[in-house]
Length: 117
Image (tube, rainbow, N blue to C red; front, top):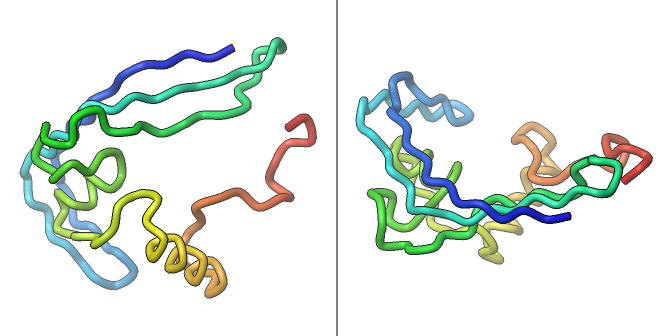
């Protein structure tokens, strides 16, 4: 079973962002992401087996230069990531962060995935 739906995120940065030692002070500015389409898939038992975080519908909407979700929030905070989701250089940087071990994760550890998956 699959459901497609649209979202537009809005947020105000009211607190400082500490990005691994680089502090971005609160801007108190509203971020308005472009509309994005999301989808969720679940099995007959009702368990979610896949969720896709939005693909931008119109990159010219909003005030985040076409960036949505977390990329848009970080952009509004002043953290100008010179990449978009799916960017090959960004993927390499994510993997290097995983090897280092202290910079978060962008995919699940095998041991954290439920057996039914």
